[in-house]
Image (cartoon, rainbow, N blue to C red; front, top):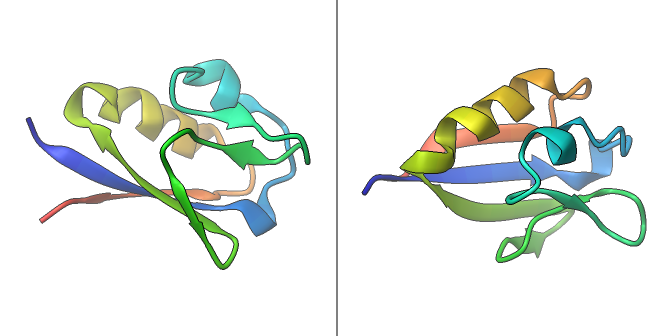
Length: 77
């Protein structure tokens, strides 16, 4: 199954929780109110992780709905 890399810029997150409401099995809000995702690694304010192809459509919808465009998706090579 194909995997996709997800990069989230937590520094720009305004905690509107649209992503959480659309994909609660991938996204949640941390205690500081900003986006987080289990299994993702934080590097310099960016969360980086992978999702399965089965999650792609839902995560794409969350990325498009994000008012601050903090979610980016790339195909894993």
